[in-house]
Length: 193
Image (cartoon, rainbow, N blue to C red; front, top):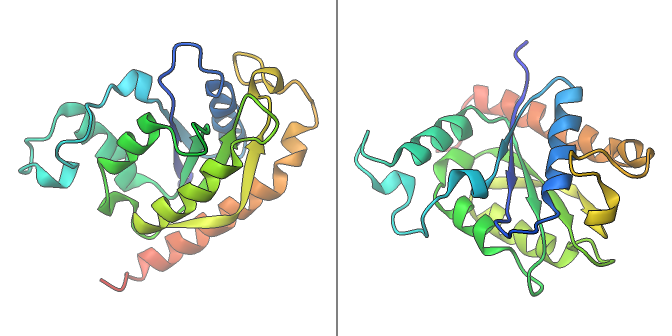
C-alpha cells in the first residue's frame, strides 16, 4: 500500500518564529509512522496576498507555486495544520496560504496542531481553524495537539525537550491516521458531488 500523503501546513513568516520547531516535530513524527509528510512553509513558498484562487486561473495559467501546491494537495490523504495564535486568531500567512485553494481540500481530514509562546498553546486559534477548515471542505479530527511555550518545548530541528512528548501525541496521531484511512476508502467509492 502507498504511504499516506500529508502536507504539514505551517503558518508563520515572522523573522523570529518559533512554531517552525513544532512543525518539524510533526513532519518527523508522521514520517516515523511511514507517511509522506511534506512541510509547506509560507516563508519558502512566498504566496502573494490572495487576489485570485488557484481555481480562478485558466488551466495551466496559475503561478508555478500554486500549481506545485495544488498538485501536492490533490495527492493528500489529510492535512496537518500547524498554527500559532495571533491576537486570539489565525496567523495571516496561514489564512492566506489556505485561502488560495478549495476543492483540493474536499473530503479530507485535517489535524490541528497549535502553539504559543505562552501557556495556552494557541487553543483559541485552533477553535477558529475548525470553522475555517470545515467551510473549506475538510473534516477536522476531534483531538487537537497544543504546545505551550513552543520555543522551550523543541530544539530548532524539532526535537522535543521532553522525551515523553511523542508518547503524549500518540492518540492524536492514531486518530488522524484512522480518519485519513477511513476517508480515503470512502473517496475511492465516490463522493456526493
